[in-house]
Length: 597
Image (cartoon, rainbow, N blue to C red; front, top):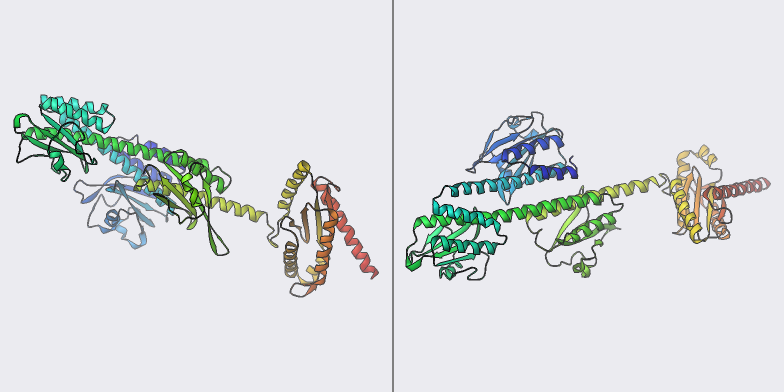
């Protein structure tokens, strides 16, 4: 599987390709490189929108070099613009390029809801969900690059056409090139109006942006502006039938309508069709510039977001706990100034779902009143689930400041971020569970010797620094070998489990009880004197002796020895030796009393 750094490299490398075939071949080669056992083909939509045409393929030559609309197996995915995963055992073998493939994936190549082609992958094994999402991600990046290349080619075509015009037209070529020097839309409009007036000698030139509520955005006072607020110009240009000295020209590029240019010739002179065609070409080029800038800004913003999100995830992966991971992600999102964020943790305690905020940035004041209530919505907030392998760990809530995440691409970016956050969350839980299990005794469920030694080191360090006392107790089950020999190890294990349960119930929450090995246990009692510990264990010992244990109702007894810090030592070895010695003294006294009895 490709890692996050390779994804960044993929996004950067694909930008270097100058043609759509080059992009297609790079995508196919990358897929076959990072997904072993997968073979890819790249199809593009024909000009008439009626078929898919093969543009690039990898190790295997495909069976189909063009795919007609009647081939519903493919076009179902394209019409819905959704990825389709097919079981190869259920489809005809003749449409498979790889005869022993088990899975066929069809990924639409879509940009701005516009279908551009399809990525077809055949795999020798069933791909996990993460691999299919990777294919969708690569198809989206390819679609962006193809759109960018088409846009540049279209602009180049427009420039070539303008360059072949006559003197008057060449003058407008110079004007069109000059348009690139202006940064804002309104400045470009003002410059265009001035030059059109100078070149054509029109007495009145006005421009109305499609999203403007004002009647006259620029210079002039053509009456048709008021009419244009009711009707959008669809034709390239329209000469007014009742007054041929007035003309309206659409500022439009492909499907994007920017506004309308209105002109009026001097002395009621009729405007000729040639001037309309010339102004229409200029306005189309003007619209192409605006569209290009808009697309460049959008692509640049998306790429910045992609890099920022990938860097956030890479850095977050190095944090120790899920709280630190979520806190870091929220902090970085808030620092981007694009959004404010917080993370809810969802957990189940005694069959009851509990939701609480575990990460909230310092600047996220807008969330202050929400507390731990996820049902409270604030403005245009966006909630994205944080999940891994079907389990939902939490919710990433985003307050979109600039509207960057309101479109499909922005929401997809948030989903990718939340998905990686879910993977980190899941792995941290697995690691925590594994560590927890490694420190527990597998039979009794008590802490094991390793954990006990760690806690003792911590407590000794605390006592050296701040003072205080604690008691250490060694416990041994009397004559346990005889029980095993007589009744078997299964019965012996049952006694150990029952004894461990009793010992856990009789100590405080601040105390620690661990299985030291075999039939030996060790206990730690912070802020407890030797005398108090002895009284506690004498009481526990009497309770053990007064009960019957196991499936056979056996009698049990324990021997114990207590050592106290700092009186009996200030390190683990000396305390354990002292407690062990006193335990054996107790065991010998018990044997002597038994022989006397």
